[in-house]
Amino acid sequence: MTVFPVPPAFLAPFAALVGVALGSFGNVLIYRVPRMEGVGGRSRCPHCSRVLTAWELIPLLSFVLLRGRCRGCRASIALLYPLVELLSGAVFPLGLWLSGWQVLPGLVLGTALWFFLLAAAMDLQTGLVSDAFSIPLLFFAGFYAFQHPGLSLLPALIGGAFFGVQWVAGGGGGGGSADVLVGAAMGFLAGTVPLLLTALFAAYIIGACVAAVLLLSGRRTMGEQLEFIPFLFAGTVIALVWGERIVQAYVGG
Image (cartoon, rainbow, N blue to C red; front, side):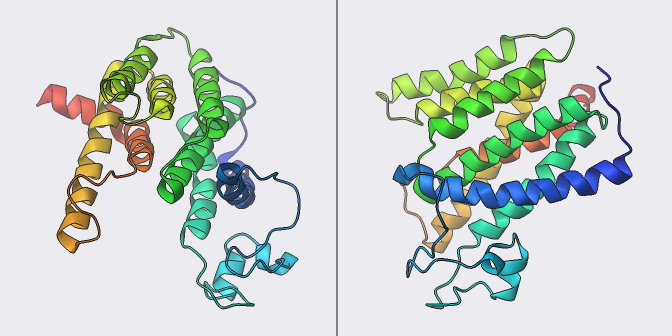
């Protein structure tokens, strides 16, 4: 599908800048949504509640200038904030690149990955994922999938069912209902069952490696739940970027 092709030399930097700005807004959502706070109003330091000035809210740059600390109380600013801004600046150019620099499909894919990123960051910060992130993720992932000929709903059904079974088997607490929506969204984004399986396999491998490091370092104990949406996000990106080569190498091998 060819829609509004634009030269990458212009589009990529613009998309990155917009993404970084959206990442700053995303940090507001990640902080306020779980607390049932409105998105309006001035931003405050979560430690001393001081209202932040405009120059303290410049994406990425403010973190560097402030050396990662609040100007008022000198409390450390969580690394998650600049990380979300940085990755937000990456997912939109990535979506455009994966879509052959076609604007509409690329922005839809980038938006889906952005909501996926916010869901991952919220899970990492709170251990929960709000429908405010998982539902838009599923919507934009489905919209992206429907732009492609030969659409198959099977990957989305498998992705949702994979986590749905775990959720039901865990009595409604194993994994979480948000995982079902995320799994279905992964299926839409992958587009094929082999790529979905690649995304899941990569997520579980990365998760197992991180869990092993945390256990050996004493930062986690056996039986302690590990936030998993970040690994699903990473696995999906791996499948989108390298999945075809991984599948071909496996089949050829």
